[in-house]
View 1 (cartoon, helix red, strand yellow):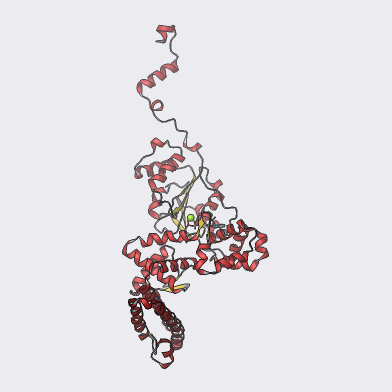
View 2: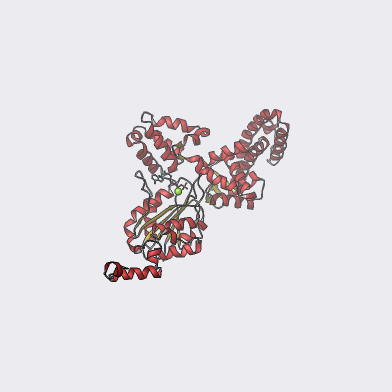
Length: 468
Ligand SMILES: Nc1ncnc2c1ncn2[C@@H]1O[C@H](COP(=O)(O)OP(=O)(O)OP(=O)(O)O)[C@@H](O)[C@H]1O
Ligand SMILES: [Mg+2]
């Protein structure tokens, strides 16, 4: 056409283009050309917390493990909600930025989010592949294919992958690179014991000094220095939990005229404490509620665990034993132990020594709230009596440890708690006056329980139990 109308021949490059068009060459019809992968450096990390305190040993351990010889090292941080796993992971990733020439891929997997569902691996793979420079249209929709594409794309690039707030191991497995140049940091409330090449690190509570340091960072060192006792008491009421301390710190920062002692007073009432631990989008209650809700939705076994959790809260004890929980549930100790193990996996209780479990103060307050909300009066009476049973169980436990003191310890502890329980039970009966069934359940169980106490018919107990 050019030769016919203008008398000139097409240039060699125009001829080549003409041939490409006829051949439907892909770079003309499809996606834009991809830049060479090595040129893209992903920088997806959120900012680090500028008031970050402590965790030096944890940072050193993780940095050491990631620099170790494993083919594709995976470090998994686990711990209770609000303990600071995400803050620590982000801190570590910033610190290691120079070691990873390909940059950092970060995703919040939403496994610890009260409002959003956990992300599906296929959605995360899509995000990661696009961030690595793969055009949207070329991202496979099948999770297996997408995993292969992701592993091929990331191989040799030296990328640190941060998988934050994972719900479980299944959510992260497809997101692990298989290449020695890359490293992975995962955070999850659960210990993801089945991850390949995984090293696990527990993220616990802050020390009292770190806790006060965090408070000072949030609300001002001068205010903390002016009221050191109140500051110490405040972080204690927060159970040394970073999330709770950040909240009270932010509340104080927003009220420059408040003395620290004012917030101490407000938090001192256990019935109000969880409501006081809310500020803006930070709140302790939903963080615990998320785990509890997953448990109570989890079929008959989950319901049993949720009930055990409420009853444990009702004991007001900082630690419980499997025997005690067996008494609370009216189930065999072996079942009680497996219920406690499940609660421990969900971070609602923490294993201390074999058969003994601790419960964080704030978690216990949440359990008490749920118990009061969901148990009807007969069940609450039952729980009250079970509490006595737990204490008697503890007496047995103490007795078994020291045979010489067996009798004395059992009677002393049993006596003290039975007095208290009898007083409370009488109060309940008075309140249940209009509810005959509640009162009769209580009385029958009280008799049965008391029948199991050695010597309860002795005259010195008549005062306490005669009226039952
Ligand atoms: N070492 C720390 N120094 C300062 N602030 C911290 C520290 N650890 C945690 N925080 C703050 O405490 C709050 C809770 O921390 P984070 O979100 O990391 O907890 P988490 O363990 O990841 O909880 P979840 O299980 O709910 O995901 C955040 O606001 C965080 O910035
Ligand atoms: Mg987190």
